[in-house]
Every structure is written in C-alpha cells, then in structure tokens.
Length: 196
Image (cartoon, rainbow, N blue to C red; front, top):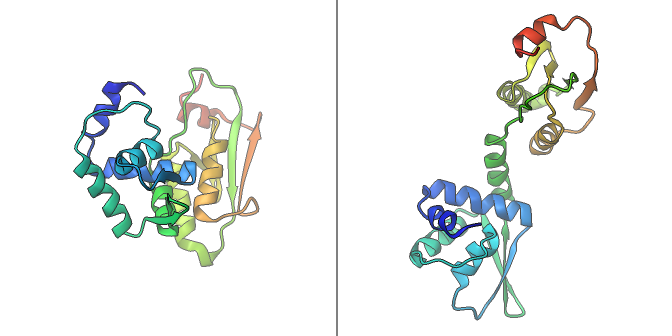
C-alpha cells in the first residue's frame, strides 16, 4: 500500500474506518501487539489493516476509534505474557459480516462463459426473516427469479453464495447452487441479462 493511499485512509469517514478495521479483524482473526510498545494504537491499526509504512496522523483519532469499538462491544482485549490480543466479539463478527454482505457484488466478466448459475433454496417458515433477506440479496446480486424459490444468474457467484450461506446460518440443504450449461429455453433470460 503506497504512502498516499495510507494518508488518504485517515481522511475516510469514521464509519469506513470502523468497517475496514472490523473486516480486517474478521479476516485475520485478530492482532497481537507488544504491551510495552509506545506505538500501541498505531501498531494496532497497522497490523489490523495491513499497513507496512508509517505516516504522520493524529494518534487521538486512532485511540478514539479503538475506544469506540471496545465501548460498543465489537472488540475484546486480552493481556497475556506482555502481549495484547485484540479480536472481535460475537457482536463484532456479526457487524463485520454485515459490512461484508452490504458490499457484496458479483463480478461481471467481459465475456460470458455460457453457463447458468441456478440457486434453489428451501428456508423454513421459522426463518422467514432470513428467507426474505436472502431473497433480497439475490436481487442485489443480479439474480433473476425463475420460479418461487429458484433464481438464476449467468455469472460466477460461488464465493458470494457461500458467504451468504454462512452469514444467514444456512446449510447446503437450505441453499443449493447449480452450475448448468443448459436450462431449456433461455431467450428471455439472455435478453434480461443482455447476453449475446
């Protein structure tokens, strides 16, 4: 990461700083910082966010963000053997997962591989909220409804569907992704997705 990008990071809105920190902790599983380090806050942000270069920035801003994450119950701090271990709480994992889900997008390739991705789901009435939210995310991810619980997309989305499954606590029995070369007459779908 270049120094210009590093400086820009600290001009980001507060919510974006929190989002990046929580997401990074979600990916890394946590960070460890030396207890005696005079650069505790800088080291936390650098380790959590993958910074390799140092830059001048307001240390108070770092401390405030760190304090707020702790105050909201999103991170926990444990001290062992003169090391500080910083990790997400369950609430923090959920928040980081929400940020991750909110930013989820299916990449549209320059050329279609002529395969259909078909999602079939069976989510019980007990999880009606999950079902509605899952359906909403499929729409956002460019899926088109083929039947009541059958949605189609022409683009690779395996990782995105797996992430949605995990986030909503669903199994493969609840949500299946099928990759098919043929799904019958697909002219309307090709037109809908503007495929040639």
